[in-house]
Length: 287
Image 1 (cartoon, helix red, strand yellow):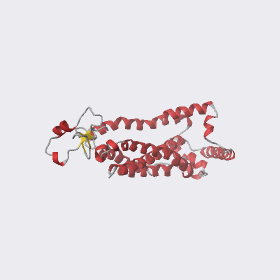
Image 2 (spheres, one colour):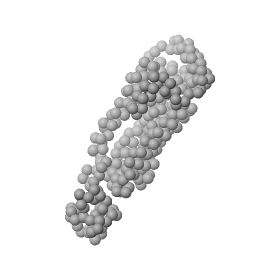
Image 3 (cartoon, one colour):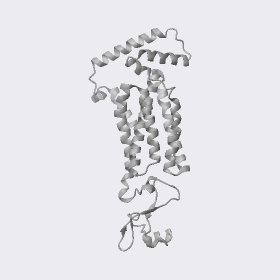
Image 4 (spheres, one colour):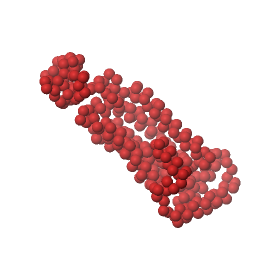
Protein backbone atom coordinates (compact mmCIF):
# COMPACT_ATOMS: atom_id res chain seq x y z
CA UNK A 1 0.00 0.00 0.00
CA UNK A 2 0.98 3.64 -0.41
CA UNK A 3 2.17 4.91 2.98
CA UNK A 4 3.02 8.56 3.57
CA UNK A 5 6.46 9.15 5.09
CA UNK A 6 8.93 11.93 5.86
CA UNK A 7 12.43 12.41 7.26
CA UNK A 8 12.89 11.32 10.85
CA UNK A 9 14.06 13.83 13.49
CA UNK A 10 17.77 13.91 14.35
CA UNK A 11 18.62 13.45 18.00
CA UNK A 12 18.97 17.19 18.66
CA UNK A 13 15.37 17.80 17.56
CA UNK A 14 13.70 14.99 19.51
CA UNK A 15 11.96 17.51 21.78
CA UNK A 16 9.92 18.81 18.83
CA UNK A 17 6.48 17.44 18.06
CA UNK A 18 6.01 15.70 14.72
CA UNK A 19 3.92 18.62 13.46
CA UNK A 20 6.55 21.19 14.45
CA UNK A 21 9.27 19.12 12.82
CA UNK A 22 7.39 18.77 9.56
CA UNK A 23 6.42 22.45 9.45
CA UNK A 24 10.04 23.48 9.95
CA UNK A 25 11.87 21.08 7.63
CA UNK A 26 9.47 19.63 5.04
CA UNK A 27 8.65 21.59 1.90
CA UNK A 28 5.58 19.97 0.38
CA UNK A 29 6.11 21.87 -2.88
CA UNK A 30 9.39 20.07 -3.34
CA UNK A 31 8.75 16.75 -5.18
CA UNK A 32 11.54 15.21 -3.07
CA UNK A 33 10.16 16.38 0.27
CA UNK A 34 9.83 12.78 1.45
CA UNK A 35 13.53 12.13 0.92
CA UNK A 36 15.15 15.43 1.96
CA UNK A 37 14.70 18.00 4.73
CA UNK A 38 15.54 21.68 4.75
CA UNK A 39 18.56 22.75 6.76
CA UNK A 40 20.00 25.30 4.33
CA UNK A 41 20.99 23.46 2.23
CA UNK A 42 18.63 20.43 2.06
CA UNK A 43 20.04 17.21 3.51
CA UNK A 44 19.35 13.61 2.57
CA UNK A 45 17.19 11.73 5.09
CA UNK A 46 18.99 9.15 7.20
CA UNK A 47 15.81 7.62 8.62
CA UNK A 48 12.07 8.12 8.21
CA UNK A 49 8.82 8.45 10.09
CA UNK A 50 5.64 6.93 8.67
CA UNK A 51 1.97 7.74 8.79
CA UNK A 52 0.43 4.84 10.76
CA UNK A 53 -3.03 6.37 10.97
CA UNK A 54 -4.35 3.65 8.65
CA UNK A 55 -1.73 0.96 7.94
CA UNK A 56 -0.20 -0.34 11.15
CA UNK A 57 2.59 -2.11 9.29
CA UNK A 58 3.59 -2.55 5.65
CA UNK A 59 6.70 -3.67 3.82
CA UNK A 60 7.36 0.02 3.07
CA UNK A 61 7.57 1.06 6.71
CA UNK A 62 9.06 -2.22 7.93
CA UNK A 63 12.19 -2.06 5.75
CA UNK A 64 12.30 1.61 4.68
CA UNK A 65 11.51 0.90 1.03
CA UNK A 66 11.47 4.58 0.11
CA UNK A 67 13.50 7.09 -1.90
CA UNK A 68 16.48 5.30 -3.47
CA UNK A 69 15.08 1.91 -2.36
CA UNK A 70 11.53 2.34 -3.62
CA UNK A 71 12.20 0.05 -6.60
CA UNK A 72 12.26 -2.89 -4.18
CA UNK A 73 8.49 -2.51 -3.71
CA UNK A 74 7.96 -3.32 -7.40
CA UNK A 75 10.54 -6.11 -7.14
CA UNK A 76 8.33 -7.98 -4.67
CA UNK A 77 5.56 -8.24 -7.27
CA UNK A 78 7.99 -8.91 -10.11
CA UNK A 79 9.46 -11.81 -8.14
CA UNK A 80 5.97 -13.26 -7.79
CA UNK A 81 5.31 -13.10 -11.53
CA UNK A 82 8.71 -14.63 -12.30
CA UNK A 83 7.76 -17.50 -9.98
CA UNK A 84 4.56 -18.01 -11.96
CA UNK A 85 6.49 -18.04 -15.25
CA UNK A 86 9.06 -20.55 -14.00
CA UNK A 87 6.32 -22.83 -12.68
CA UNK A 88 4.57 -22.97 -16.03
CA UNK A 89 7.78 -24.10 -17.72
CA UNK A 90 9.05 -26.53 -15.06
CA UNK A 91 6.04 -27.99 -13.26
CA UNK A 92 3.95 -28.43 -16.39
CA UNK A 93 6.57 -30.71 -17.93
CA UNK A 94 7.19 -32.47 -14.62
CA UNK A 95 3.50 -33.22 -14.06
CA UNK A 96 3.39 -34.92 -17.46
CA UNK A 97 6.23 -37.21 -16.37
CA UNK A 98 5.42 -38.12 -12.75
CA UNK A 99 1.71 -37.37 -12.49
CA UNK A 100 -0.66 -34.62 -11.45
CA UNK A 101 -1.13 -35.63 -7.82
CA UNK A 102 2.53 -35.42 -6.70
CA UNK A 103 2.92 -31.96 -8.25
CA UNK A 104 -0.24 -30.67 -6.58
CA UNK A 105 0.97 -31.80 -3.17
CA UNK A 106 4.51 -30.55 -3.73
CA UNK A 107 3.09 -27.18 -4.78
CA UNK A 108 0.87 -27.02 -1.69
CA UNK A 109 3.76 -27.78 0.67
CA UNK A 110 5.96 -25.15 -1.01
CA UNK A 111 3.11 -22.66 -0.87
CA UNK A 112 2.49 -23.21 2.85
CA UNK A 113 6.17 -22.93 3.77
CA UNK A 114 6.66 -19.84 1.58
CA UNK A 115 3.51 -18.23 2.97
CA UNK A 116 4.76 -18.60 6.54
CA UNK A 117 8.21 -17.44 5.44
CA UNK A 118 6.68 -14.30 3.92
CA UNK A 119 4.82 -13.53 7.13
CA UNK A 120 7.96 -13.88 9.25
CA UNK A 121 10.45 -12.29 6.82
CA UNK A 122 13.36 -10.50 8.49
CA UNK A 123 14.42 -8.43 5.47
CA UNK A 124 13.05 -7.27 2.16
CA UNK A 125 15.39 -9.70 0.36
CA UNK A 126 13.96 -12.54 2.45
CA UNK A 127 10.45 -11.34 1.56
CA UNK A 128 11.23 -11.21 -2.18
CA UNK A 129 12.61 -14.76 -2.18
CA UNK A 130 9.57 -15.94 -0.21
CA UNK A 131 7.25 -14.27 -2.72
CA UNK A 132 9.00 -16.08 -5.58
CA UNK A 133 8.62 -19.43 -3.78
CA UNK A 134 5.01 -18.63 -2.90
CA UNK A 135 4.15 -18.01 -6.54
CA UNK A 136 6.02 -21.16 -7.56
CA UNK A 137 4.06 -23.35 -5.15
CA UNK A 138 0.67 -21.69 -5.67
CA UNK A 139 0.93 -21.86 -9.47
CA UNK A 140 2.02 -25.50 -9.36
CA UNK A 141 -0.91 -26.42 -7.12
CA UNK A 142 -3.51 -24.40 -8.97
CA UNK A 143 -2.35 -24.98 -12.54
CA UNK A 144 -1.88 -28.72 -12.15
CA UNK A 145 -5.14 -28.96 -10.22
CA UNK A 146 -6.91 -27.27 -13.11
CA UNK A 147 -5.50 -29.84 -15.53
CA UNK A 148 -6.47 -32.69 -13.19
CA UNK A 149 -10.02 -31.36 -12.98
CA UNK A 150 -10.45 -31.15 -16.75
CA UNK A 151 -8.93 -34.61 -17.24
CA UNK A 152 -11.31 -36.13 -14.70
CA UNK A 153 -14.61 -34.92 -16.17
CA UNK A 154 -16.16 -35.58 -19.55
CA UNK A 155 -15.77 -33.13 -22.47
CA UNK A 156 -19.33 -31.84 -22.09
CA UNK A 157 -18.65 -30.67 -18.53
CA UNK A 158 -15.28 -29.02 -19.08
CA UNK A 159 -16.55 -25.50 -19.90
CA UNK A 160 -18.69 -25.48 -16.75
CA UNK A 161 -16.06 -26.80 -14.32
CA UNK A 162 -13.37 -24.71 -16.01
CA UNK A 163 -15.33 -21.57 -15.13
CA UNK A 164 -16.45 -22.86 -11.72
CA UNK A 165 -12.87 -23.30 -10.50
CA UNK A 166 -12.28 -19.60 -11.18
CA UNK A 167 -15.00 -18.60 -8.70
CA UNK A 168 -12.67 -19.25 -5.77
CA UNK A 169 -9.99 -17.05 -7.36
CA UNK A 170 -12.52 -14.25 -7.95
CA UNK A 171 -13.95 -14.62 -4.44
CA UNK A 172 -10.47 -14.24 -2.99
CA UNK A 173 -9.98 -10.96 -4.83
CA UNK A 174 -13.31 -9.74 -3.42
CA UNK A 175 -12.62 -10.81 0.18
CA UNK A 176 -8.93 -9.81 0.39
CA UNK A 177 -9.45 -6.00 0.33
CA UNK A 178 -11.98 -6.28 3.17
CA UNK A 179 -9.62 -8.48 5.18
CA UNK A 180 -6.75 -6.05 4.58
CA UNK A 181 -8.96 -3.14 5.68
CA UNK A 182 -9.72 -4.90 8.97
CA UNK A 183 -6.23 -6.26 9.69
CA UNK A 184 -3.95 -3.49 8.32
CA UNK A 185 -0.73 -5.35 9.05
CA UNK A 186 1.06 -7.11 6.19
CA UNK A 187 2.33 -9.98 8.37
CA UNK A 188 -1.11 -10.80 9.76
CA UNK A 189 -2.68 -10.43 6.32
CA UNK A 190 -0.23 -13.02 4.98
CA UNK A 191 -1.04 -15.35 7.87
CA UNK A 192 -4.78 -14.86 7.30
CA UNK A 193 -4.29 -16.00 3.70
CA UNK A 194 -1.90 -18.88 4.47
CA UNK A 195 -3.28 -20.59 7.58
CA UNK A 196 -6.66 -21.66 6.08
CA UNK A 197 -4.75 -23.52 3.36
CA UNK A 198 -3.49 -26.03 5.92
CA UNK A 199 -7.01 -27.49 5.78
CA UNK A 200 -6.18 -28.70 2.26
CA UNK A 201 -3.81 -31.26 3.82
CA UNK A 202 -6.94 -33.16 4.93
CA UNK A 203 -7.62 -33.69 1.23
CA UNK A 204 -4.58 -35.96 0.85
CA UNK A 205 -6.42 -39.29 0.83
CA UNK A 206 -9.37 -38.05 -1.22
CA UNK A 207 -7.44 -36.57 -4.15
CA UNK A 208 -7.16 -39.12 -6.99
CA UNK A 209 -4.63 -39.25 -9.77
CA UNK A 210 -5.83 -38.33 -13.24
CA UNK A 211 -7.25 -41.47 -14.94
CA UNK A 212 -6.27 -40.02 -18.32
CA UNK A 213 -2.68 -39.60 -17.17
CA UNK A 214 -2.69 -43.15 -15.80
CA UNK A 215 -3.98 -44.56 -19.08
CA UNK A 216 -1.47 -42.55 -21.12
CA UNK A 217 1.42 -43.88 -19.01
CA UNK A 218 0.28 -47.49 -18.94
CA UNK A 219 -1.08 -47.60 -15.37
CA UNK A 220 -4.21 -49.45 -16.47
CA UNK A 221 -5.11 -51.14 -13.19
CA UNK A 222 -4.88 -47.87 -11.25
CA UNK A 223 -6.98 -46.15 -13.92
CA UNK A 224 -9.58 -48.91 -13.75
CA UNK A 225 -9.88 -48.57 -9.97
CA UNK A 226 -10.23 -44.79 -10.25
CA UNK A 227 -12.90 -45.02 -12.94
CA UNK A 228 -14.84 -47.70 -11.05
CA UNK A 229 -14.78 -45.58 -7.92
CA UNK A 230 -16.01 -42.55 -9.86
CA UNK A 231 -18.82 -44.61 -11.39
CA UNK A 232 -19.91 -45.84 -7.96
CA UNK A 233 -19.86 -42.33 -6.47
CA UNK A 234 -21.91 -41.02 -9.41
CA UNK A 235 -24.37 -43.91 -9.16
CA UNK A 236 -23.53 -45.27 -12.61
CA UNK A 237 -23.67 -48.92 -13.57
CA UNK A 238 -20.36 -50.81 -13.72
CA UNK A 239 -21.76 -53.85 -15.55
CA UNK A 240 -20.16 -53.12 -18.93
CA UNK A 241 -17.32 -51.01 -17.62
CA UNK A 242 -14.67 -53.61 -18.55
CA UNK A 243 -15.53 -53.44 -22.25
CA UNK A 244 -15.59 -49.65 -22.20
CA UNK A 245 -12.27 -49.52 -20.39
CA UNK A 246 -10.67 -51.89 -22.88
CA UNK A 247 -11.91 -49.74 -25.76
CA UNK A 248 -10.59 -46.62 -24.04
CA UNK A 249 -7.22 -48.27 -23.37
CA UNK A 250 -6.86 -49.36 -26.99
CA UNK A 251 -7.63 -45.83 -28.18
CA UNK A 252 -5.14 -44.37 -25.69
CA UNK A 253 -2.40 -46.74 -26.89
CA UNK A 254 -3.14 -45.90 -30.53
CA UNK A 255 -3.09 -42.15 -29.81
CA UNK A 256 0.19 -42.49 -27.91
CA UNK A 257 1.83 -44.42 -30.75
CA UNK A 258 0.62 -41.78 -33.21
CA UNK A 259 2.05 -39.00 -31.04
CA UNK A 260 5.42 -40.77 -30.81
CA UNK A 261 5.54 -41.30 -34.58
CA UNK A 262 4.75 -37.63 -35.23
CA UNK A 263 6.64 -36.05 -32.35
CA UNK A 264 7.76 -32.93 -34.16
CA UNK A 265 5.55 -30.38 -32.44
CA UNK A 266 6.96 -26.93 -31.77
CA UNK A 267 5.85 -23.43 -30.86
CA UNK A 268 4.97 -22.59 -34.46
CA UNK A 269 2.20 -25.22 -34.40
CA UNK A 270 0.12 -22.60 -32.57
CA UNK A 271 -0.02 -20.64 -35.83
CA UNK A 272 -0.74 -23.48 -38.27
CA UNK A 273 -4.54 -23.14 -38.19
CA UNK A 274 -7.02 -20.31 -37.70
CA UNK A 275 -8.57 -22.10 -34.74
CA UNK A 276 -5.24 -22.46 -32.94
CA UNK A 277 -4.37 -18.82 -33.63
CA UNK A 278 -7.74 -17.68 -32.29
CA UNK A 279 -7.47 -19.81 -29.15
CA UNK A 280 -3.87 -18.68 -28.55
CA UNK A 281 -4.81 -15.00 -28.81
CA UNK A 282 -7.79 -15.45 -26.47
CA UNK A 283 -5.66 -17.24 -23.88
CA UNK A 284 -2.93 -14.60 -24.18
CA UNK A 285 -5.29 -11.75 -23.37
CA UNK A 286 -7.11 -13.79 -20.70
CA UNK A 287 -3.83 -14.21 -18.81
